Structure formats: structure tokens, C-alpha cells
Length: 135
Image (cartoon, rainbow, N blue to C red; front, side, top):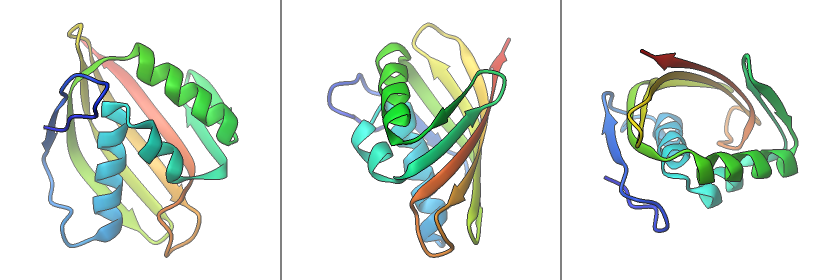
């Protein structure tokens, strides 16, 4: 379990091992930070020209727009549990999928696809998110 300070405890379940890959470990931590509302970690690890497309919802361009949207999301979305099923990385690309359960009981399956600044960097330049409400 991770305590993000100003947020309630969020249960975190990781279904995959990322120990042998620093980029996979980073993506796991990045997604946990999303679920716990850790704006400092999230914002520190994206480029100034970040592009985030949440398919069927919105497109976020640039660090200012990203900061505003992330902080709005973190203040209104209370995550009770995050389960990460798979974490994949190769070169400049990565992906994570799993399930988020909110405090109100709603569940959302997610798949996030990442493009890093370059093959050696963990700075994220682009995110494409698929989010589906689970019945």
C-alpha cells in the first residue's frame, strides 16, 4: 500500500514483475503515482511538450494543460485500488494495463501507451489512454 500523504490509502496490486527492467519499473511507479494522485512525480517525468490523448474524451497538449488536467483529476477522482496487470517496454515505447476501483465502487479498465523522449530516457513525451467503465 502506498500513502501519498494528502490522499487516503490506496491499495496497490501488481500482477507482473518489473524487477529486471528499469523502464518497466518506472512505468509501474508512474501508474501507481497516477492512482495515488502524486502530482510531483507525474509532472517531473513528462516533457514540456507532453501530448496526452484520452480517447473519446479529450486531448491535452503542453505541460501547463497537463498539470491543470492532472491536478483536477487527482482532486476529484478518489482511487480506492489500482491493479496493474501488465507492463511492457521496448525502446522508446511502453504500455501498462490494469483496473482502477474508485472509492464509490466504480471500476475502470485502462490501457496506457507511452512514448518516451528517447530510448534511454524515462521522460514521457506522449500518452494515449484507453479507459472503459466496467459494469
